[in-house]
Length: 419
Image (cartoon, rainbow, N blue to C red; front, side, top):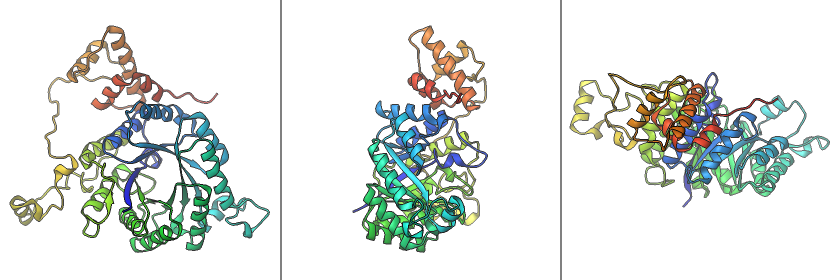
């Protein structure tokens, strides 16, 4: 039976959230947490972008060392020859998604007559179908192990062209087809029909990429997944931690997993990748909130502070008698429930102006020792730079990562402007 896999796009689409962003060290930590959570793939950045190069290559090196494993790391590129070539000649990238707009609104509104969708529109102009096929073949020639083709604004693209586009992608050697509900325009019933149609008529694994402009990103992602599986193909749902992303955000990672595992029409009927470990939800959501500087909403699914809170008399009484009365799932399933310690007395922290004594004190509490003074001094210098890099106090996991992988931490935090 086909299966549902999770492809998290926090480090690609989530960081495009207006007014927000992540430092490269923070993006790396999210990749590490996603790997620990058993997520199939992280779309971890833009491999053709200069300031991403060191981060991209360092994370690919972490994968080679077995640290970021078995998670796959994939890049995102526009459907342009120069960006694709740059991505594969300056990094060790093996997985990529190539994106281009497919709706009449976007192709006419963005390309301004420079390209047409099909050759019969104007044989003298480049056409979208041929260009897409050539770019897929180029990525494969340059060493791509897998290539996904993205139909931007697929939800506003008519059925016949979407089918033609997906078939051309398959002919060119694409490994998956990403259906992008770029404006959050879809509804669950419509998207189920369209995705099942694509699955049955094209037979290519499908990615669901849904935005939340109408509040239906999770519903549409899950309905699309049902359509793909009912149509006989594997499906990859794009998610973002805490629903981060452009405008109203992407489909929330935790909500999608809970919906697949717990919803009445899905539980036990559709197979989710067995590696997914929901117990990481609490830790990952808290870290992303800290890194982005955006508090977790009080009513956030699963991880909000009110997700398991009961105050009214009837509810409190019912929950105390049997939590199944008012809780659909257990808080322990999300890694919640343990007491969290907060320092209320003396606390030594490390920052950009820290000295060796304070540094050793903090690492000593984490039971991390250094072989000699030079090693300690070198790690302290990296920690200082990391504090400048993130502009936040470093977390314990960030400090551990720097101590364990100082060479890659140095590269991740190094960005040289173009001359």
